[in-house]
Amino acid sequence: MKYMLLIYGSEDTWTEQEREDCMLESMAISDELESQGKWIASSPLFPVSSATSLRVRNGKRQITDGPFAETVEQLGGYYIIDVVDLDEALSIAERLPPSKKGTVEIRPLFPLPARRASNITAEETR
View 1 (tube, rainbow, N blue to C red):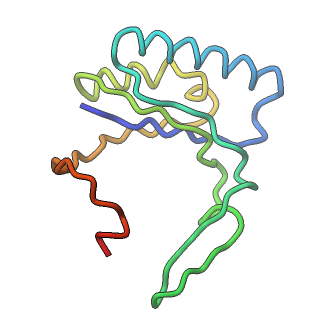
View 2: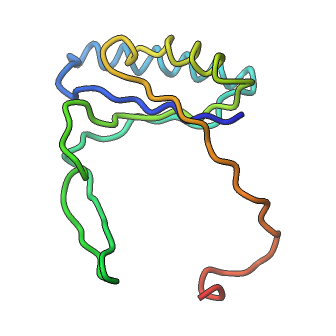
């Protein structure tokens, strides 16, 4: 089962040294998971101040700087893993350094129906 681990925390919680240590420890966990065939992707995100939000209303797009909602904790990164079940996802999530200062939200990825193999371009589907 594939899960996305969403990393939330207050951006001002970490010192520069703590942030670097967090990234190094997180990368080591990613390497371990990859060697077990359980890691698909992970990455920290730039600060929320770099975000752009888009909404389409009445056929018109509305673009605003920053996140859609203001919260104490911001989305700071993610992991996508392929594990046996939620219990295994939870045991991985609790090892991640941000779980000690913020929140790790664990959500199963919804399986998409199989796509037919073709060379249809996006333009051809309009």
